[in-house]
Amino acid sequence: MLRPAGLWRLCRRPWAARVSAENPGRREITSGVSPRGSTSLRALNIFDRDLKRKQKNWAARQPEPTKFDYLKEEVGSRIADRVYDIPRAFPLALDLGCGRGYIAQYLNKETIGKLFQVDIAENALKNSLETEIPTVSVLADEEFLPFRENTFDLVVSSLSLHWVNDLPRALEQIHYILKPDGVFIGAMFGGDTLYELRCSLQLAETEREGGFSPHVSPFTAVNDLGHLLGRAGFNTLTVDTDEIQVNYPGMFELMEDLQGMGESNCSWNRKALLHRDTMLAAAAVYREMYRNEDGSVPATYQIYYMIGWKYHESQARPAERGSATVSFGELGKINNLMPQGKKSQ
Image (cartoon, rainbow, N blue to C red; front, side, top):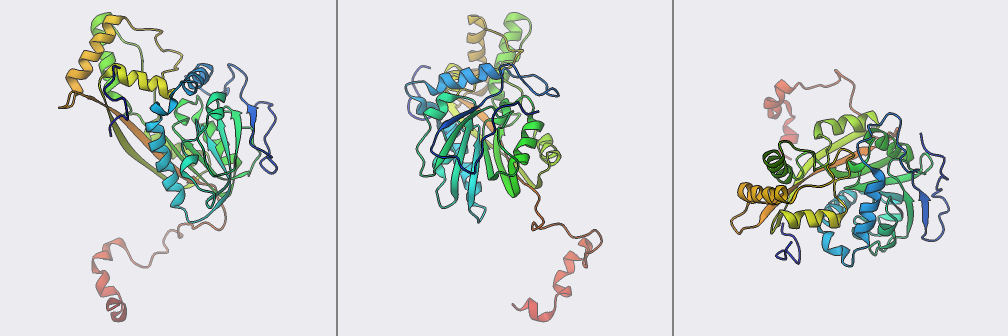
């Protein structure tokens, strides 16, 4: 996958008012953002959420924000494909961390009756992409959702949950606001995302400054994701991984695009700046270790996709242990076990 046009240029819940989905009225922006500096008492405070809000607002204010939307639009389309794989309509849906509406643009009104779009950045909501679905914009933090229990038939989220400080609680809140037999479909960056950039910066900083600081934010491991979904109350889980590789002219163009996406590092332990010599050395290391035959350099984005359902008595359940009539050891003789009439069909 190539970077689009311009490839070769230099380069507890807070006491906020809850939003009722029963009578939302016209499209509007309703605030449910957490107080500045607030976070769950049990959470590790890894990310500066106020800084992340500023980064996303800055990115949405740029003259050509669509220039940096290519990755989020691609993942948004893949989330939409998974929605269409479920043969049913969803009268009320929520897009959590919607950005400029990267999932909504691929959905239709035959599948989604009404869509609530939630994001921490007001500028992203104001500049959202067009969609044929009736929408309501809600300014709220993904860590503090202002919705009632059993509200939504569907919750989707694309490339947003990797910035929350308390992912287990965020998943519990998603489960809380889903109706029974509702489904959550999400995508987030995985642990191997931008490993090329991470390695190059670490090597260069170690050589030039005698040690390194984290410049790429930490990500959740795929082995933990299924456990977190199960602990939040979801069942019939599906977790899979994918990789998207984008080629850039160089490391600086990659970093420019990350800033334009609103995906710059916001960890509290980030280093404020890097020396010029260290940055130039990192770019040289990146090119030497990873460059393609055409001179471009790759950047790998690992994506975790997850699907989880809220329990309902109508859902299929596994048979009781010991109720099988054929053992796995006899599967090789399946033709001999079948009646003759069924063999000929």
